[in-house]
Structure formats: structure tokens, C-alpha cells
Image (cartoon, rainbow, N blue to C red; front, side, top):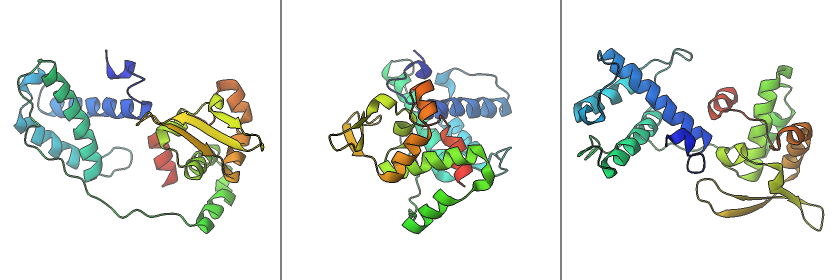
Length: 218
């Protein structure tokens, strides 16, 4: 099975990342004069060259180059593919042996209550896509849900207790651990705003890609 068929093991954002790695590999191999090569021929030298390719590739939309942590994330996906091939005896070695992937830890910044209120009340020029991203973001920070869990949240996972308070009940996608979360007032406002969407699709929030959300948030 391909990764895109393993929807219980991989969330849509992860599948998108694997597809992007495949796209970048195709671009890299094309620059090397190859349409494709056997996986066994992808040497450690090719791996280092691919890493350099990722770090120097200019995004045609943003005109920016890739940051270290994004490069590391893509290489970790490629490493998983090679590890799987090695375990299944498709190859006898992996070019990732002995390679330590670099990750830069940054200082996380947090919004204040005043900043959240400003975000909630901003007109955003009446642009619908920005308003939907804002609602998605407000819901996530009010519940503590990961993007993938919020993305897949269905109306069946929302319930009211004896005091008429809203709760979420779900299994976390990454850990498969059960979770119950009370909905804060601002999360309830977002939930009620998309009633028509819930009735039509069964999903609590409008479906937006992680990349689109990050771009609009910036």
C-alpha cells in the first residue's frame, strides 16, 4: 500500500509532506539528469547533495529558501522510506546511517489575552478565507488541539454534559490516547458559527490545509 492509502496510520498533513518530498526528489534528480533511479543507487553522496538542494531551493511563490527545521522534517520523511526499504530487505544499506539530522530549537512566543481579543475582533477586510483561518486558529488555541485533530474533528465528538456545557471527546491522532476537553466560550462561538457546515459535512471546522493556515496566519 502507498502512504496515501494508510489513512489510519498517517494524517492528511503528513501525507502532504511525503508528496512534497517526492516532488523535491523529482526536481533534484532532474537536475542530475535522471528521471528516476533505483533506490539502492541513492548514495550518501546523493543524500548530502539533496540536502544542499533543499537548503538552497528558492520557493517560486514566496521567493524564500527553506529553513533548517523544514529541511530536517523532509529528510526525516525520506529516512523513514529508506528504513522501511531496509527492513523489508529491498536494500542492504541506507544512506542515512551515521547521519544526524539537525534541528534548531527556537524560543516559542505566546499570544496574550489582549492579542487574542484583537484577533477575534479584527474585521480582516471581510476576506472570507482569512476569517475561516482565524476561526480555525482560535478554536485550536482554545482547546489545545493539534492541527490534525482539529482538522478531523466531527460533530459526533462534541457532546453536552448535565449542566449543558459543551465537551469534546476524541482519540488523539498522534498518540491514540482518549481525550475529553471542555469547550471555552470562544470555542463554542466558533462551533456555533459553522452549524450549516457541520450539518452538511459532519465536520466541526472548515477544511483548510496546514500550509494555507500558516500562510494566512503570517
